[in-house]
Amino acid sequence: MTAKKMFELIMQKAIDDERIRAVTMNGSRADKNATHDKYSDFDIVYYVKDIREFTQNRSWIEDFGEILIMQCPMDWYMEPYDYESRDNFNYLIQFKDGNRIDLSLVDISNIEQEKENDEPRIVLLNKDNYDSLVNCDTDKAFWVDKPSEKEFQDTINEFRWVSIYVSKGLCRKQLYYAKHMYDVNVMEMFMKMLNWKIGVDNNFQVSTGAHSKYLYRYLNENEMKRVHSIFPGGEYEDIWMKLFLMYDYFEENTAYVAKHLGFHYDKNEGEAVRDFICGRKKEYDCSENKDH
Image (cartoon, rainbow, N blue to C red; front, side, top):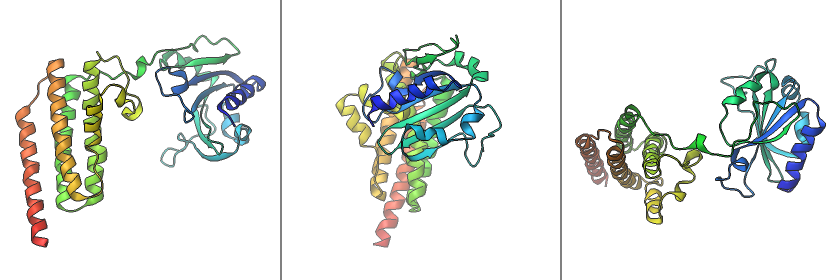
C-alpha cells in the first residue's frame, strides 16, 4: 500500500467512526526540518470518546493492513497498563507492506493536556473544535538545550569516571562490560557535549534529532569522519585506541563549550584521568606480552 493510501485510510477511519473526535499528525511528517522518505512513520493521534473501547478490543487496527509486528510500550511487563483506565495509550505498528503507524490514543477527558504540547503538529480533523488542538510548525521543542553549569560539570565527571570503567573491563578482558560502558554510558556523555558544541555554534536554536541523527547537518565532512572514527569494533586493541580518540575529542569539545558559556574547565583533572587510563593500557600490554 502506498503512503498516500495509508493516509487516506487513517483519515477515513476517523471521519466514519463517531467515537473519534479529532486527529493530529505529529513526528517527522509534521516537522518540515525532518527527513522525509519512504521510511517515515505516520505519527497519528486519535482523540476518542472512550479510550477503553479502543484498548480492550484491538481488532479495528487490522483495518489498516496486515500487521508484521506490534508493540504497546505503555503495557510493559514492569508497568502493566490498566485497561479499565482512561490513560493515554500507544500502538506502534509495523505493517507487512512497509508502512508504519505510531498510533496514540487520547481520551477526550484528557484533551486539555494538549495545550502544553509544543512539538510539531498538524491538526487533521477537529469535529468539536477543541481549542487545545492547534498547529505547531516549529521544531523549537527539540532544540539543543543550553546546559546549566551543574549539568555541564556532572557530564564531565561522568565521562571521565566511566572511562576508567572501560579501561578496567578491557584489562580484565570483559568484552561486553567494556563495550557496554563505552557504547552506552561514556558515549551518552560524549554526545551530550558534542551537541552542546553544536548548540554553541548555532545559538542553541537547532535540533540534532532523536539520538543525534542529524549531526551531519551541523558538522563538516572532516568532523563527521572524526565522529565515525570513535566507534570501536569487537577487538580489545581497537576499543583501547577508540577510547583515547574519544577521550581527546571530548576534552577538546569540553574546553570549547566551557570557554563560550563561561564555565569552569578543570584541564588538570582531565589530563590526570587520561594518564591513569594510559597506565592501565600499559598494564594490559604487559599482560598480553606475558601471555605470548
